Image (tube, rainbow, N blue to C red; front, side):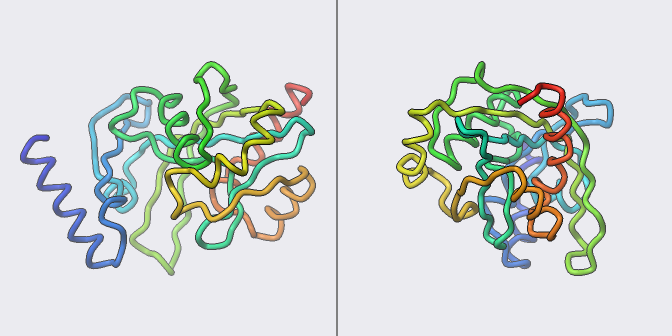
Length: 208
């Protein structure tokens, strides 16, 4: 890590401390991209979300053998896509990032070739008076993973052994109608709210 990057990371840590945020989360290095998708460097997560630097995020809709969708409950109580997270400096591809997030957030170990890529889209967060310094610009890649019967049966025990037990409080299976109702009632986190229309289009085109 060069001196200039180290200075930026130290600055992000100080800002996080002043705002009462997690230092580890604030200084996590994310890959930053130009509008045309070219990689242009690294920046701490806090600065990406403060300066609106375009970075990549991955989300995975997880389906049960009976067709239901798995949703997670976030710290703020809202429902979200089963798995989601950023592409960090340690991830070479979005598939690498998602395999890591699956392991951390659900305890599932999944081979990359099982992930069905649905689409990519850009998501720019709206201005919020409650958090005026937050400016999030993400290039999101959506995937779908259908669990086998064995994975479905073992999910609860795998989830209890997950690595990340802070951001995700619980997971629960929902029929599609209940997922849409949660979105309509403003009970969905941004990951789910921004991605559900893309999932529905993919579902229609693939006849699932």
